[in-house]
Amino acid sequence: MTRAGLANYTPDRPLILLTDYPPDTAGGGAVILRSLLGPEERSSLVWISPTPPANPSTAGPNVVTLRSGSAGRGPRSLGRDSTIHAAALSREVLAEAQSRRAQAVWSVMHGAAVAIVARCLRAGPLPFHLTVHDDPAFANALRSKRYLALVPWIERDFAFAMKGATSIDVIGQGMADRYRRRYGVDSVVIHRALKAPISPSPSYDRGRCGLRVGVLGSTYSYDQLPLLARAVEIAAGRLGVPGRLLIMGQSYGDRLKSESGDRLDVEVTGHISEDDAVPLLRDCFTLYLNYPFGRRDAVLRQTSFPTKLSTYIQAARPLLLHVPADSSVIPLVNRDGFATAWADLDPEHGADALVATWSQPQNHESRHVEAEEVRLMYYHPDRNRQTLFDALNGLVPAPIGVGVAS
Image (cartoon, rainbow, N blue to C red; front, side, top):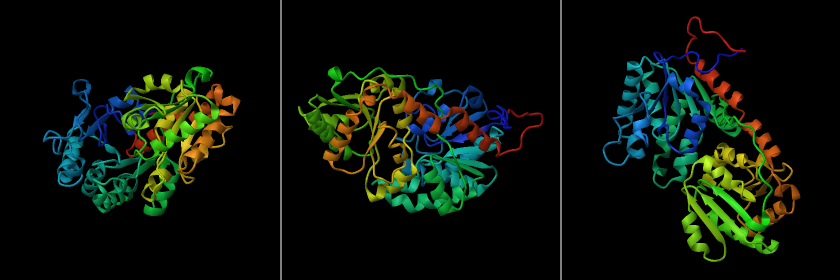
């Protein structure tokens, strides 16, 4: 027996959701949150951010942009909001919560929210639930030249917040295990909610498309893209078909296209919506998902989980995982050739993986059965939503007269 939705909150006694980004951003974290929250939940929730929405005219009264940070004083600065403005931003969050008669706060621990939450918790008036999609100190700041110097302070605030939170959700079991060891806290695992079953894709048209590999979103750096291009070039030569790359999103596609010249057909779309991306991905032979190999990237690849996988499986095409053996996505490998690992930085080995994938007849047909298995394993909508709502409702007592759903 569980309470349905955000049963313990109302528009008059809402839940505060604090994120570094606004609700209408295109990033993976916001995609996850929007998939979990329906209109009924959004009516009992006030979404607060130090970053203004992309389209303020459609934001609505339950979207609040904090005024105490860098926004409105020139370009928004994550560094300033995490340091010199953090105390003022935390006071504003608590004042907004008080004026709205909010009962609790839910925050995604990303960007300036880490510093803001730590300071709010020191004030202590409200229970907090924390969501972690990427470790802010060791998966983000440690890999950034701009924020590398802030790692000790981010880790200090993050550790304090994690230990002071009432409840926590994380993006995978590897992250849950790390935080149990490091901070002594327990957490639940929550992924994006994908409601619709995976529909079949058309048979792959090798005559029209050749060896076409799709890449969606960030690849974390440029370094692995030229290796992929070389692997596709080698594999296409072995197979006697044209080699092609389709790159979607704000990545390094234009640079690769320029450097590839006539050796490879590189198509770059720029940012497009998921609804527009899925049909294009269905027209690819395989879809490329990577994590970086460096020592400073270890926490990222071991504890994070890529939101783009939830888009990829909707295309019902095979996956090429260019990741070290300790990555969080390695359990996807060995699904009857649905996901193939390329576990080093040698393009020849990448070509071997592509040729092996091509040689399996089932990979030229729809892989919706295997994709549906992945959807149910990670993105089951009822399970993910209920796990989240159980945690959020657990922050406060149930109102008198509120029932439960079986």
